[in-house]
Image (cartoon, rainbow, N blue to C red):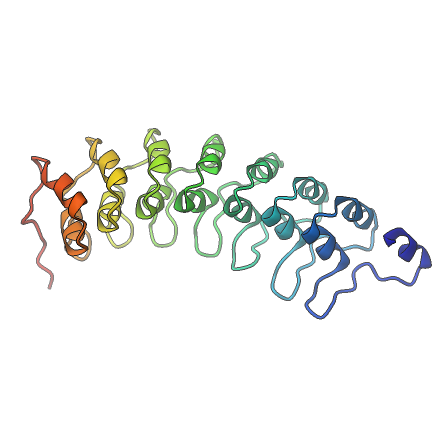
Length: 258
């Protein structure tokens, strides 16, 4: 049907509907690889056209896990693989969110691709994968030499901070196995991974972090709170017991705030 319509000569392959969605947009969204090939074979089709919500065909393909279509789109020199789309995230981040590891590998296999490019919030794909506990994506990204495993976002939160805050013990272990990750690195508020895990009651993460010799369990944040204080104020009894078992915990430590 698509071929027949094109034979007429009066069909506009780029004509959008009221929401800015083109024929290529729809074919990509629904995963119709054959139609995508036909459309991309034309010189008058814009493969990177955004709809009125800022969504590109590549975004749709990565979000929905259409690996074949992702490869077709990336084969074009006029498709921007780093285009910030839909809420300011990159196509790679949408692939990470969708747990589409095949798409992640395809994107990372593209030449001149920056796997550590932050989104509009300053968060990297690794940080996003860590926050959501996507261990497969974390491992794939960490295989790259051009991914900084300790890169902070605009609020100073590293991938380890995100994983600790969300309670993803598996990701925490993966990150701590690296020599280039600071296990005690604070965010802009001075909160360390241990402080975040303690405050949210993630006992498994707290246990893993406390096994490290390079973590200060009494470290104060900008609010004058230690990990123990956060656990106590939030009623995290299990975490409080774990912290109090340590000989180097000072239960009375608190900075006086002016």
